[in-house]
Image (cartoon, rainbow, N blue to C red; front, side, top):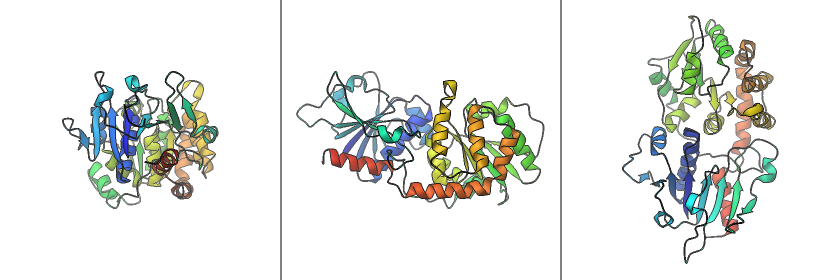
Length: 354
């Protein structure tokens, strides 16, 4: 089958990351895929091998989604996927002439709340065109649309990557924390806790560029034994490897959040901040679906409220072994469920075998 993914880059890396991962997994499953994306430089940061002058990334055909793009410029496809309600634009009412119209899906943002189980897979006809779109909601439950997941990658050399990024070897017993958060993250308590941790154990904080680095730079911190490393942007392959070898991964949004589960290491999720702390419903919904240590449960809620302090972070750091076991149990449960791509292909075959 031929798929077309429609993607507009709104949340910097997240939208492009999910679209690219889905496209890559479809190709691995023997499908053909075209990605329409409106900002190639974002995709290139995730995939340095991308040549903007060439219309493909691996086996994925790339089309720049510009204002002058017309329906006739698209290849014939059996399935169209609108990523994150980005809008079909002039393609909304288009049906290829003399061919069976493509099945249309709206790939929604990750859902963790109970309503996801009741809304995933619902079909909605457009009253103007009569064209039906099926809403596909990724999630952690067996009744959701599942999670993007590849076959386990070869991460055996992850420690070598860590040594390269930190410009030298580190102790196998060191505490390593990766930080990828939003500007609003309450980092002062975390910083103090890591300084205390560094008195007892070699401790490294790995900070990604952009908002995490800006948020950290605003902290008035005394000198300490904490070793802080400002990382460059990593390819997605290297990011996955880094998550695999850290003691704790602080992640944000959606794509890095899901990747942290597959890494199997303790994680702290900084959900996208919303008015009136609406993101707490997402965080609470996720925590309710998984085993979690009490220290990490409390830290998640207070961190996403912006009120986490040193005692919250210290309690979580002390609970890392317990949380590691809990996360591994949850990962095992998730690995027993079909992936998003597997569920999607099964649904397509049920709707209209090609």
